[in-house]
Length: 138
Image (cartoon, rainbow, N blue to C red; front, side):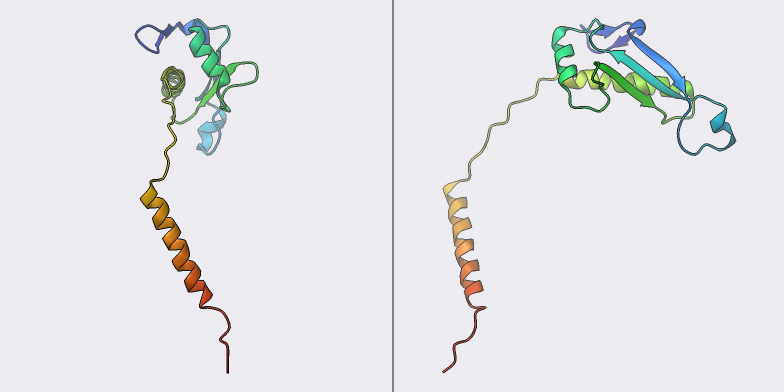
């Protein structure tokens, strides 16, 4: 059982965990042991509330496929068990991230004093640049 919040949890049967070989250096053991883990979670077929499903499907995240399946590859650790727990924790965090309500950004406007300072600085810079012109001779 993967607990997302007090009200929401996922049964272990809702996601598929498959052992695969890890990438990168690993010495003689790397070709023999499947220590990395692929976790696959079908969003549409899950028991998540509709709000969670909509937000997960709308995510612009490379881990979410076009078919609505989250694929997480965990290969941070040397053992399959640690990688399995890491993949579960990353799935939990991904689902929790869409559960939080994003605060709406309130656009701010510059103050009058800030506008005045900006204009004064532009004027000063313009006068300074004007001095770079050719010197008029007699």
